Image (cartoon, rainbow, N blue to C red; front, side, top):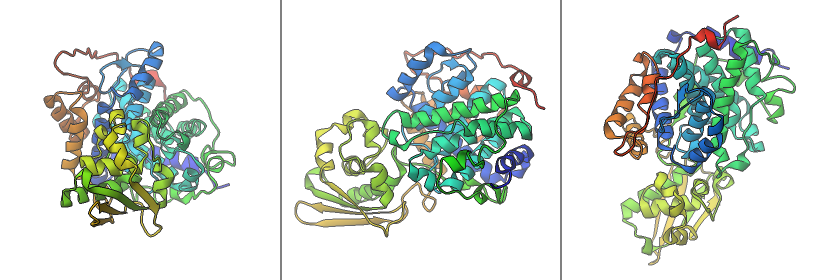
Length: 470
């Protein structure tokens, strides 16, 4: 068994100082938080979130943290869960391409609730966020792709470690307490790919946020776990993966940062479909294609596309996010693949169904994950083609700050007025200067005509009441 992998992670978290993290990494952290917040604020009216809230509401504790985009205040564990669910509901969140982890969801949801409750300053929030993402992505790298191929949803399974690490940093846990926190996280690590296309997929993110936060809170009270929760013979990496490379976890701490490999989605669906959408939109716009002109759409895609998104007859919007056929159809018809294209009504639209049935996707092993080949045959026999080598949103073709701001506005416009949207955008860019996070949280409460939501300040207890260091 490798020596002390879990302890090496704990030691890194404890030793890390704010000044050890380069400024470009903090800049990327702000981009990730902006994207996470937009996805979270935009989703709380979706049935996935409202049903989760309705099911759990009778069991909420004291009003400690905000359910973003709604205004209700609940206990921090439920806030972490609900915000995590919301952040992943649209499948519009960030993606670490090397592991297909959506890093911000579990980490930001956990420590946003904790930081609001604790009165944490923005600078410390950002530092903890960076460390949480670093931990979950390194652990993800150690077991990917075997762990994912078996059927585990790596965002949920690795995300719980990131949430625990980030929350542990904010709570000031000792090295030993962090070893325990990571072990408590390991024994809660879960999420099944079988659930893709259902409400359980975003639930994985919410559960990881809540469970990781709980792990840190328990460890703060010296609640123990095994010492080798990650590397033990019956620990996370050996039980949940057929292969593992612990060097991805233990080597090079601080010499490279996983956040710099993070990407942001321009389309609200599984990321492996993005090259197809990008190419279809380009062909539509370049040739001014009309629906009645199209005979068929043929796609050459990476093998993972059909494995993950091969649903040819989606019944609801969440399933449409995992249908390359649906995505190609709406990309050509609408020239877009935002959340509107995955509404249940759009899935059932006769015109969309008719074109969806004329889409054929085949595996092309020469095509990379962020590439696709599209051929559209018109009724007059003309064939127009496009090969996308690096789709928009990839590391080679990243979304700009302006792109992210536009995405944020689009997500938040149904929930917030224009002034508060701009205030939130500015607050994210200036997060390192924030005195405390509760003001930022309060800005996410709906403020539209005819809608009144009370946002109370709530009690902020001293950190000592959450657990002392040993």
